[in-house]
Length: 439
Ligand code: KE4
Image 1 (cartoon, rainbow, N blue to C red):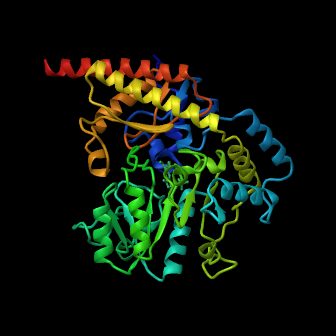
Image 2 (image 1 turned 90 degrees about the vertical axis):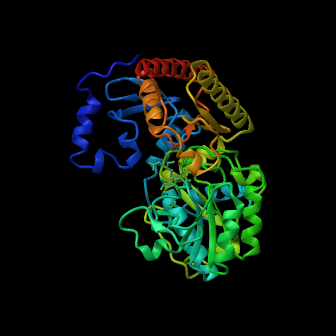
Image 3 (image 1 turned 90 degrees about the horizontal axis):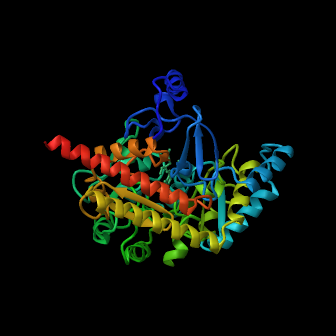
Protein backbone atom coordinates (compact mmCIF):
# COMPACT_ATOMS: atom_id res chain seq x y z
CA UNK A 1 0.00 0.00 0.00
CA UNK A 2 1.11 3.58 -0.70
CA UNK A 3 1.03 5.83 2.34
CA UNK A 4 -0.18 9.38 1.87
CA UNK A 5 1.62 11.55 4.46
CA UNK A 6 -0.40 14.37 5.98
CA UNK A 7 1.31 17.16 4.07
CA UNK A 8 2.62 15.63 0.90
CA UNK A 9 4.14 17.71 -1.87
CA UNK A 10 0.91 17.21 -3.86
CA UNK A 11 -1.21 18.51 -1.01
CA UNK A 12 1.04 21.57 -0.67
CA UNK A 13 0.96 22.18 -4.43
CA UNK A 14 -2.80 21.67 -4.59
CA UNK A 15 -3.24 24.35 -1.92
CA UNK A 16 -1.03 26.73 -3.91
CA UNK A 17 -2.72 25.79 -7.20
CA UNK A 18 -6.18 26.63 -5.85
CA UNK A 19 -4.95 30.15 -5.22
CA UNK A 20 -4.29 30.75 -8.92
CA UNK A 21 -6.16 28.11 -10.97
CA UNK A 22 -9.94 27.58 -10.61
CA UNK A 23 -10.21 24.40 -8.53
CA UNK A 24 -6.42 24.09 -8.71
CA UNK A 25 -6.55 22.54 -12.17
CA UNK A 26 -6.70 23.32 -15.86
CA UNK A 27 -9.41 20.76 -16.59
CA UNK A 28 -12.17 19.94 -14.07
CA UNK A 29 -11.93 16.14 -13.94
CA UNK A 30 -8.32 16.39 -12.69
CA UNK A 31 -9.46 17.93 -9.38
CA UNK A 32 -10.70 14.54 -8.06
CA UNK A 33 -14.07 16.08 -7.15
CA UNK A 34 -15.82 12.83 -8.14
CA UNK A 35 -13.57 10.56 -6.07
CA UNK A 36 -12.29 12.74 -3.21
CA UNK A 37 -8.79 13.24 -1.94
CA UNK A 38 -5.85 15.19 -3.33
CA UNK A 39 -4.79 14.61 -6.93
CA UNK A 40 -1.17 13.50 -7.15
CA UNK A 41 0.82 16.24 -8.90
CA UNK A 42 2.75 14.38 -11.56
CA UNK A 43 6.43 15.16 -11.89
CA UNK A 44 7.40 12.74 -14.68
CA UNK A 45 6.17 9.74 -16.62
CA UNK A 46 7.74 6.92 -18.61
CA UNK A 47 6.15 3.89 -20.28
CA UNK A 48 3.08 2.75 -18.35
CA UNK A 49 3.97 4.67 -15.19
CA UNK A 50 3.59 8.17 -13.78
CA UNK A 51 5.54 9.45 -10.75
CA UNK A 52 4.21 12.16 -8.42
CA UNK A 53 6.03 14.97 -6.62
CA UNK A 54 6.54 12.71 -3.60
CA UNK A 55 8.23 10.09 -5.75
CA UNK A 56 5.29 7.69 -5.64
CA UNK A 57 4.94 5.62 -8.80
CA UNK A 58 1.64 4.41 -10.27
CA UNK A 59 0.66 2.15 -13.14
CA UNK A 60 -1.31 4.63 -15.23
CA UNK A 61 -4.66 3.83 -16.89
CA UNK A 62 -5.55 7.47 -17.60
CA UNK A 63 -2.71 7.89 -20.15
CA UNK A 64 -3.54 11.59 -20.48
CA UNK A 65 -7.18 10.59 -21.30
CA UNK A 66 -6.18 8.66 -24.42
CA UNK A 67 -3.33 10.29 -26.39
CA UNK A 68 -0.52 8.12 -25.04
CA UNK A 69 -1.22 4.97 -27.06
CA UNK A 70 2.54 4.27 -27.16
CA UNK A 71 3.02 4.95 -23.44
CA UNK A 72 4.61 7.97 -21.79
CA UNK A 73 7.76 9.59 -23.25
CA UNK A 74 8.78 6.83 -25.69
CA UNK A 75 12.42 7.14 -26.78
CA UNK A 76 11.61 7.68 -30.46
CA UNK A 77 9.21 10.51 -29.66
CA UNK A 78 11.75 12.18 -27.35
CA UNK A 79 14.37 12.04 -30.11
CA UNK A 80 11.98 13.39 -32.76
CA UNK A 81 10.95 16.32 -30.54
CA UNK A 82 14.54 17.14 -29.54
CA UNK A 83 15.47 17.39 -33.22
CA UNK A 84 12.36 19.45 -34.00
CA UNK A 85 13.04 21.94 -31.18
CA UNK A 86 16.45 22.68 -32.70
CA UNK A 87 14.66 23.91 -35.83
CA UNK A 88 12.31 26.23 -33.96
CA UNK A 89 9.02 25.85 -32.10
CA UNK A 90 6.44 27.82 -34.08
CA UNK A 91 6.47 29.68 -37.38
CA UNK A 92 2.91 30.70 -38.19
CA UNK A 93 3.65 29.52 -41.70
CA UNK A 94 3.08 26.33 -43.69
CA UNK A 95 5.50 23.44 -43.13
CA UNK A 96 6.18 20.07 -44.75
CA UNK A 97 5.30 18.45 -41.40
CA UNK A 98 1.60 19.31 -41.64
CA UNK A 99 1.45 18.03 -45.23
CA UNK A 100 2.97 14.75 -44.05
CA UNK A 101 0.50 14.38 -41.20
CA UNK A 102 -2.45 15.32 -43.42
CA UNK A 103 -1.48 12.68 -45.97
CA UNK A 104 -1.10 10.05 -43.24
CA UNK A 105 -4.55 10.89 -41.84
CA UNK A 106 -6.08 10.55 -45.32
CA UNK A 107 -4.30 7.21 -45.88
CA UNK A 108 -5.60 5.85 -42.57
CA UNK A 109 -9.10 7.37 -42.90
CA UNK A 110 -9.93 7.71 -46.63
CA UNK A 111 -13.23 9.50 -45.82
CA UNK A 112 -11.02 12.45 -44.87
CA UNK A 113 -10.26 13.84 -48.32
CA UNK A 114 -9.24 17.19 -46.86
CA UNK A 115 -8.22 17.95 -43.26
CA UNK A 116 -7.64 21.06 -41.17
CA UNK A 117 -5.46 20.88 -38.05
CA UNK A 118 -6.47 22.79 -34.93
CA UNK A 119 -5.30 22.66 -31.29
CA UNK A 120 -7.93 20.60 -29.46
CA UNK A 121 -10.88 18.30 -29.90
CA UNK A 122 -13.15 21.15 -28.87
CA UNK A 123 -11.87 23.32 -31.71
CA UNK A 124 -12.35 20.42 -34.11
CA UNK A 125 -15.98 19.78 -33.21
CA UNK A 126 -16.88 23.47 -33.02
CA UNK A 127 -15.42 24.01 -36.50
CA UNK A 128 -17.04 20.91 -38.00
CA UNK A 129 -20.39 22.08 -36.64
CA UNK A 130 -20.00 25.57 -38.16
CA UNK A 131 -19.12 23.96 -41.49
CA UNK A 132 -22.12 21.62 -41.32
CA UNK A 133 -24.49 24.51 -40.68
CA UNK A 134 -22.92 26.58 -43.45
CA UNK A 135 -23.11 23.95 -46.19
CA UNK A 136 -26.69 22.86 -45.37
CA UNK A 137 -28.09 26.29 -44.52
CA UNK A 138 -29.73 24.65 -41.50
CA UNK A 139 -29.18 25.44 -37.80
CA UNK A 140 -30.26 22.43 -35.75
CA UNK A 141 -28.02 19.51 -34.78
CA UNK A 142 -28.56 16.19 -33.07
CA UNK A 143 -26.25 14.93 -30.35
CA UNK A 144 -26.64 12.05 -27.89
CA UNK A 145 -27.15 12.14 -24.13
CA UNK A 146 -23.88 11.03 -22.55
CA UNK A 147 -21.70 11.92 -25.52
CA UNK A 148 -19.20 14.73 -24.99
CA UNK A 149 -17.80 16.78 -27.85
CA UNK A 150 -15.74 19.37 -25.96
CA UNK A 151 -16.96 22.55 -24.33
CA UNK A 152 -18.38 24.41 -27.36
CA UNK A 153 -21.69 26.14 -26.48
CA UNK A 154 -23.74 23.99 -28.87
CA UNK A 155 -22.61 20.81 -27.11
CA UNK A 156 -23.18 21.83 -23.46
CA UNK A 157 -26.83 20.92 -23.86
CA UNK A 158 -29.19 18.35 -22.38
CA UNK A 159 -32.55 17.16 -23.57
CA UNK A 160 -35.46 19.48 -22.97
CA UNK A 161 -38.54 18.37 -21.03
CA UNK A 162 -39.91 16.11 -23.77
CA UNK A 163 -37.89 13.70 -25.87
CA UNK A 164 -38.32 15.73 -29.04
CA UNK A 165 -38.20 19.22 -27.57
CA UNK A 166 -35.36 21.66 -27.98
CA UNK A 167 -32.19 21.42 -25.88
CA UNK A 168 -31.50 23.37 -22.72
CA UNK A 169 -28.05 24.48 -21.49
CA UNK A 170 -26.09 22.31 -19.05
CA UNK A 171 -23.83 25.24 -18.19
CA UNK A 172 -24.45 28.85 -17.29
CA UNK A 173 -23.20 31.15 -20.01
CA UNK A 174 -24.68 29.06 -22.83
CA UNK A 175 -27.46 31.14 -24.35
CA UNK A 176 -30.83 29.36 -24.39
CA UNK A 177 -31.16 30.35 -28.05
CA UNK A 178 -27.97 28.44 -28.86
CA UNK A 179 -28.98 25.40 -26.82
CA UNK A 180 -32.40 25.38 -28.46
CA UNK A 181 -30.80 24.41 -31.77
CA UNK A 182 -29.31 21.26 -30.23
CA UNK A 183 -31.60 18.23 -30.12
CA UNK A 184 -30.69 15.33 -27.85
CA UNK A 185 -31.28 11.68 -28.73
CA UNK A 186 -30.64 8.44 -26.82
CA UNK A 187 -27.48 6.50 -27.69
CA UNK A 188 -28.16 3.08 -29.27
CA UNK A 189 -31.79 4.10 -29.89
CA UNK A 190 -32.44 4.77 -33.59
CA UNK A 191 -36.11 5.44 -32.94
CA UNK A 192 -35.21 8.47 -30.81
CA UNK A 193 -33.25 9.82 -33.79
CA UNK A 194 -36.04 9.09 -36.25
CA UNK A 195 -38.51 10.97 -34.03
CA UNK A 196 -36.27 14.06 -34.06
CA UNK A 197 -35.92 13.98 -37.82
CA UNK A 198 -39.67 13.63 -38.19
CA UNK A 199 -40.39 16.54 -35.84
CA UNK A 200 -37.63 18.89 -37.03
CA UNK A 201 -37.64 17.83 -40.69
CA UNK A 202 -35.34 19.84 -43.00
CA UNK A 203 -34.04 21.92 -40.10
CA UNK A 204 -31.30 19.53 -39.00
CA UNK A 205 -27.85 20.34 -40.39
CA UNK A 206 -25.95 17.45 -38.86
CA UNK A 207 -25.87 14.62 -36.36
CA UNK A 208 -22.69 14.29 -34.28
CA UNK A 209 -21.88 11.07 -32.48
CA UNK A 210 -19.04 9.33 -30.69
CA UNK A 211 -19.13 6.12 -32.79
CA UNK A 212 -17.83 4.27 -29.73
CA UNK A 213 -19.03 6.31 -26.75
CA UNK A 214 -16.34 7.02 -24.17
CA UNK A 215 -17.63 9.95 -22.14
CA UNK A 216 -20.39 8.22 -20.22
CA UNK A 217 -17.86 5.50 -19.64
CA UNK A 218 -17.29 3.10 -22.54
CA UNK A 219 -20.54 2.22 -24.34
CA UNK A 220 -20.00 0.46 -27.69
CA UNK A 221 -22.56 0.94 -30.49
CA UNK A 222 -25.28 -1.71 -30.67
CA UNK A 223 -25.44 -3.74 -33.88
CA UNK A 224 -26.89 -1.66 -36.69
CA UNK A 225 -26.83 1.60 -34.73
CA UNK A 226 -24.12 3.36 -36.75
CA UNK A 227 -25.47 1.98 -40.01
CA UNK A 228 -28.88 3.36 -39.04
CA UNK A 229 -27.41 6.80 -38.34
CA UNK A 230 -25.76 6.79 -41.77
CA UNK A 231 -29.05 5.88 -43.45
CA UNK A 232 -31.15 8.43 -41.51
CA UNK A 233 -28.74 11.34 -42.09
CA UNK A 234 -28.48 10.53 -45.80
CA UNK A 235 -32.26 10.20 -46.07
CA UNK A 236 -32.75 13.66 -44.53
CA UNK A 237 -29.82 15.41 -46.27
CA UNK A 238 -28.12 15.99 -42.94
CA UNK A 239 -24.39 15.46 -42.40
CA UNK A 240 -23.07 12.57 -40.33
CA UNK A 241 -20.20 13.78 -38.14
CA UNK A 242 -18.10 11.15 -36.35
CA UNK A 243 -16.42 12.54 -33.27
CA UNK A 244 -13.41 10.21 -33.23
CA UNK A 245 -11.36 12.26 -30.77
CA UNK A 246 -11.13 9.12 -28.59
CA UNK A 247 -11.77 6.28 -31.09
CA UNK A 248 -9.58 7.74 -33.86
CA UNK A 249 -6.42 5.59 -34.20
CA UNK A 250 -7.49 3.91 -30.90
CA UNK A 251 -10.19 1.45 -32.03
CA UNK A 252 -8.02 0.66 -35.06
CA UNK A 253 -5.52 2.60 -37.17
CA UNK A 254 -8.53 3.76 -39.21
CA UNK A 255 -10.69 4.44 -36.16
CA UNK A 256 -14.27 3.33 -35.63
CA UNK A 257 -15.17 4.26 -39.21
CA UNK A 258 -12.78 1.59 -40.50
CA UNK A 259 -13.83 -0.95 -37.88
CA UNK A 260 -17.56 -0.54 -38.58
CA UNK A 261 -17.27 0.25 -42.28
CA UNK A 262 -19.14 3.57 -42.10
CA UNK A 263 -18.17 6.60 -44.20
CA UNK A 264 -19.09 9.78 -42.29
CA UNK A 265 -19.28 13.14 -44.04
CA UNK A 266 -16.98 14.78 -41.50
CA UNK A 267 -14.70 13.40 -38.78
CA UNK A 268 -13.27 15.13 -35.71
CA UNK A 269 -9.93 13.95 -34.29
CA UNK A 270 -7.73 14.71 -31.29
CA UNK A 271 -5.69 12.99 -28.57
CA UNK A 272 -3.58 10.30 -30.37
CA UNK A 273 -3.18 12.48 -33.48
CA UNK A 274 -0.99 14.84 -31.41
CA UNK A 275 1.15 12.16 -29.78
CA UNK A 276 0.63 13.97 -26.45
CA UNK A 277 0.99 17.50 -27.83
CA UNK A 278 -2.02 19.77 -28.50
CA UNK A 279 -3.52 18.73 -31.84
CA UNK A 280 -7.10 18.45 -33.00
CA UNK A 281 -8.34 18.02 -36.56
CA UNK A 282 -11.52 18.00 -38.57
CA UNK A 283 -11.89 16.78 -42.11
CA UNK A 284 -13.98 14.86 -44.58
CA UNK A 285 -15.55 15.26 -47.98
CA UNK A 286 -13.58 17.55 -50.30
CA UNK A 287 -16.69 19.44 -51.42
CA UNK A 288 -17.43 20.29 -47.79
CA UNK A 289 -13.91 21.09 -46.60
CA UNK A 290 -13.26 23.41 -49.52
CA UNK A 291 -15.89 25.69 -48.01
CA UNK A 292 -13.37 26.45 -45.24
CA UNK A 293 -11.32 29.68 -45.51
CA UNK A 294 -9.29 30.51 -47.46
CA UNK A 295 -10.85 28.35 -50.22
CA UNK A 296 -14.38 29.10 -49.03
CA UNK A 297 -16.37 31.51 -46.89
CA UNK A 298 -16.55 29.48 -43.64
CA UNK A 299 -14.08 31.11 -41.30
CA UNK A 300 -11.76 29.22 -38.95
CA UNK A 301 -8.18 30.04 -37.97
CA UNK A 302 -5.53 29.38 -35.29
CA UNK A 303 -2.17 30.85 -34.32
CA UNK A 304 -0.65 27.51 -33.35
CA UNK A 305 -2.58 25.27 -35.73
CA UNK A 306 -0.16 22.85 -37.43
CA UNK A 307 2.54 23.73 -34.89
CA UNK A 308 5.80 22.03 -35.96
CA UNK A 309 6.41 20.34 -32.59
CA UNK A 310 2.84 19.02 -32.45
CA UNK A 311 3.02 17.88 -36.08
CA UNK A 312 6.32 16.13 -35.33
CA UNK A 313 4.74 14.29 -32.40
CA UNK A 314 1.69 13.38 -34.46
CA UNK A 315 3.78 12.12 -37.36
CA UNK A 316 5.86 9.98 -35.00
CA UNK A 317 2.81 8.58 -33.18
CA UNK A 318 0.84 7.63 -36.29
CA UNK A 319 3.91 6.07 -37.91
CA UNK A 320 4.12 3.54 -35.04
CA UNK A 321 0.53 2.28 -35.45
CA UNK A 322 1.15 -1.33 -36.48
CA UNK A 323 -1.23 -4.34 -36.66
CA UNK A 324 0.94 -5.98 -33.97
CA UNK A 325 0.29 -3.02 -31.64
CA UNK A 326 -3.49 -3.35 -32.00
CA UNK A 327 -3.39 -7.11 -31.55
CA UNK A 328 -1.44 -6.60 -28.33
CA UNK A 329 -3.73 -3.82 -27.11
CA UNK A 330 -6.79 -5.99 -27.74
CA UNK A 331 -5.27 -8.88 -25.77
CA UNK A 332 -4.39 -6.63 -22.83
CA UNK A 333 -7.84 -5.04 -22.90
CA UNK A 334 -9.53 -8.43 -22.84
CA UNK A 335 -7.27 -9.64 -20.00
CA UNK A 336 -7.96 -6.54 -17.91
CA UNK A 337 -11.70 -6.75 -18.56
CA UNK A 338 -11.90 -10.44 -17.65
CA UNK A 339 -9.70 -9.94 -14.60
CA UNK A 340 -11.93 -7.16 -13.27
CA UNK A 341 -15.02 -9.27 -13.99
CA UNK A 342 -13.49 -12.20 -12.07
CA UNK A 343 -12.68 -9.93 -9.14
CA UNK A 344 -16.31 -8.77 -9.14
CA UNK A 345 -17.54 -12.40 -9.17
CA UNK A 346 -15.13 -13.52 -6.43
CA UNK A 347 -16.00 -10.64 -4.10
CA UNK A 348 -19.70 -10.18 -4.80
CA UNK A 349 -19.28 -6.51 -5.71
CA UNK A 350 -21.62 -5.69 -8.62
CA UNK A 351 -19.54 -4.46 -11.58
CA UNK A 352 -20.49 -4.35 -15.28
CA UNK A 353 -17.45 -4.23 -17.57
CA UNK A 354 -17.78 -2.51 -20.96
CA UNK A 355 -14.68 -2.97 -23.12
CA UNK A 356 -13.81 -2.06 -26.69
CA UNK A 357 -10.26 -2.91 -27.71
CA UNK A 358 -7.89 -1.13 -25.36
CA UNK A 359 -10.44 1.07 -23.61
CA UNK A 360 -12.80 -0.14 -20.88
CA UNK A 361 -14.99 1.01 -17.99
CA UNK A 362 -15.96 -0.98 -14.88
CA UNK A 363 -19.45 0.34 -14.02
CA UNK A 364 -20.39 -0.22 -10.36
CA UNK A 365 -23.88 -1.23 -11.39
CA UNK A 366 -26.09 -4.28 -11.18
CA UNK A 367 -27.38 -4.23 -14.76
CA UNK A 368 -25.79 -3.88 -18.22
CA UNK A 369 -24.90 -0.36 -19.41
CA UNK A 370 -25.86 0.52 -22.98
CA UNK A 371 -26.79 4.23 -22.83
CA UNK A 372 -26.70 7.31 -20.62
CA UNK A 373 -29.71 6.33 -18.49
CA UNK A 374 -28.23 2.96 -17.57
CA UNK A 375 -24.74 4.45 -17.15
CA UNK A 376 -25.96 7.04 -14.65
CA UNK A 377 -27.51 4.30 -12.50
CA UNK A 378 -23.95 3.31 -11.56
CA UNK A 379 -23.01 3.72 -7.89
CA UNK A 380 -20.54 6.60 -8.09
CA UNK A 381 -19.82 6.45 -4.36
CA UNK A 382 -18.75 2.83 -4.78
CA UNK A 383 -16.55 3.80 -7.73
CA UNK A 384 -14.97 6.55 -5.61
CA UNK A 385 -14.14 4.02 -2.86
CA UNK A 386 -12.77 1.64 -5.45
CA UNK A 387 -10.66 4.42 -7.01
CA UNK A 388 -9.12 5.39 -3.67
CA UNK A 389 -8.29 1.77 -2.91
CA UNK A 390 -6.64 1.33 -6.28
CA UNK A 391 -4.61 4.55 -5.95
CA UNK A 392 -3.40 3.43 -2.52
CA UNK A 393 -2.27 0.18 -4.17
CA UNK A 394 -0.26 2.01 -6.85
CA UNK A 395 -2.79 1.86 -9.68
CA UNK A 396 -4.06 5.11 -11.23
CA UNK A 397 -7.49 4.66 -12.93
CA UNK A 398 -9.55 7.62 -14.22
CA UNK A 399 -10.86 9.69 -11.27
CA UNK A 400 -14.44 9.39 -12.54
CA UNK A 401 -16.92 6.56 -13.09
CA UNK A 402 -17.83 8.02 -16.48
CA UNK A 403 -14.48 7.78 -18.25
CA UNK A 404 -12.48 5.09 -20.05
CA UNK A 405 -9.44 3.23 -18.77
CA UNK A 406 -6.74 3.41 -21.45
CA UNK A 407 -4.04 0.83 -22.19
CA UNK A 408 -0.92 1.49 -24.23
CA UNK A 409 1.90 -0.27 -26.06
CA UNK A 410 3.99 0.27 -22.93
CA UNK A 411 1.62 -1.77 -20.72
CA UNK A 412 2.58 -5.39 -20.15
CA UNK A 413 0.68 -8.40 -18.87
CA UNK A 414 2.42 -7.79 -15.53
CA UNK A 415 0.95 -4.29 -15.32
CA UNK A 416 -2.50 -5.72 -16.04
CA UNK A 417 -2.09 -8.53 -13.48
CA UNK A 418 -1.02 -5.96 -10.88
CA UNK A 419 -4.16 -3.95 -11.58
CA UNK A 420 -6.35 -7.07 -11.35
CA UNK A 421 -4.75 -8.09 -8.03
CA UNK A 422 -5.24 -4.56 -6.69
CA UNK A 423 -8.86 -4.59 -7.87
CA UNK A 424 -9.54 -7.92 -6.14
CA UNK A 425 -8.01 -6.69 -2.88
CA UNK A 426 -9.89 -3.40 -3.09
CA UNK A 427 -13.24 -5.07 -3.82
CA UNK A 428 -12.65 -7.53 -0.93
CA UNK A 429 -12.08 -4.58 1.41
CA UNK A 430 -15.22 -2.90 0.05
CA UNK A 431 -17.20 -6.11 0.66
CA UNK A 432 -15.91 -6.38 4.22
CA UNK A 433 -16.89 -2.76 4.83
CA UNK A 434 -20.36 -3.39 3.35
CA UNK A 435 -20.88 -6.43 5.62
CA UNK A 436 -19.60 -4.60 8.70
CA UNK A 437 -21.97 -1.72 8.08
CA UNK A 438 -24.91 -4.17 7.95
CA UNK A 439 -24.04 -5.73 11.33
P1 KE4 B 1 -10.39 18.47 -25.99
O1 KE4 B 1 -10.92 19.85 -26.25
O2 KE4 B 1 -10.42 18.12 -24.51
O3 KE4 B 1 -9.03 18.20 -26.65
O4 KE4 B 1 -11.38 17.43 -26.71
C1 KE4 B 1 -12.74 17.47 -26.42
C2 KE4 B 1 -13.35 16.11 -26.72
C3 KE4 B 1 -14.09 15.96 -27.87
N1 KE4 B 1 -14.64 14.76 -28.20
C4 KE4 B 1 -14.47 13.68 -27.40
C5 KE4 B 1 -15.10 12.37 -27.80
C6 KE4 B 1 -13.72 13.78 -26.20
O5 KE4 B 1 -13.57 12.68 -25.41
C7 KE4 B 1 -13.14 15.01 -25.85
C8 KE4 B 1 -12.35 15.20 -24.56
N2 KE4 B 1 -12.35 14.09 -23.65
C9 KE4 B 1 -12.20 14.43 -22.26
C10 KE4 B 1 -12.41 13.22 -21.36
N3 KE4 B 1 -12.88 12.04 -21.99
C11 KE4 B 1 -10.85 15.04 -22.01
C12 KE4 B 1 -10.43 15.10 -20.57
C13 KE4 B 1 -10.70 16.43 -19.94
O6 KE4 B 1 -11.76 17.04 -20.22
O7 KE4 B 1 -9.84 16.85 -19.13
